[in-house]
Image (cartoon, rainbow, N blue to C red; front, side, top):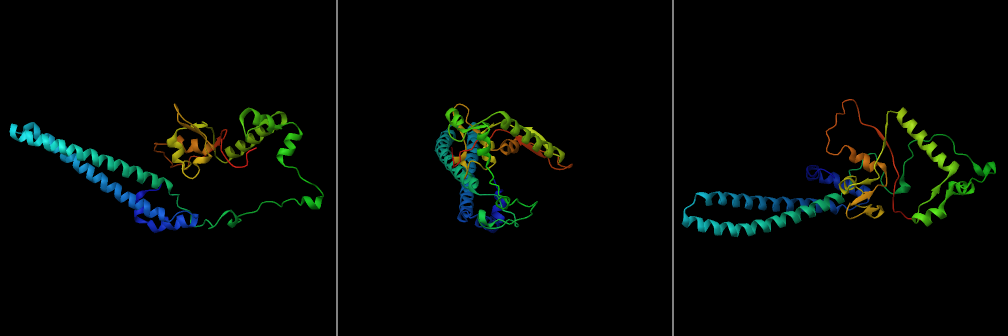
Length: 268
């Protein structure tokens, strides 16, 4: 979530970021309006509650005649306090909803546009010309099923669309590739973390996945109310939640290993 103070002071920057993303520019004004309403409602509630407490203190030392009037005033004020509290809570909820919709600020160097407007930063190696070689490559699914290492049919039978079994040499190949990736990451100063595959709603929300990506997430409802992660980044991001970190020796660098679950198009 963006800092509201930054949005107040740099609304134009946030609007430009929204425009570059192709997202709602008007959302910034909605956030600022909801922020004003929230602060106004909260101020009214706090002032009414302070007045209620002040009158309550007077009751203790008031005369019998004054006490009757003060008690009546307290009851009347209690109704207003309850009303202001409800308004404040609604305004805060509306504000929070609007804030969660805002995306992070894009980097100045990020190219504008969609997936076809990418900028090539670096090329490594030369792609093989299979046509010139007279060789027709096979995709991983064809290769895997050809050696009985990928079983989509039974995976779907057991768990539904998008699931599969890896067996034998293909299963060992996946483990070998993951181990190779971990070895390379550790050589560059990363620490391996095998992460939880279930996280609390606060962690999932904090990583931004409950906004535009909410329909891609598997959720376990009552009594647990947890989410299955679509990437180990979610758990890694929440690992140091509410901690103050000493980064004087550099950033903490992690590589995550976990099963990942996503609802996406193209199911088997």
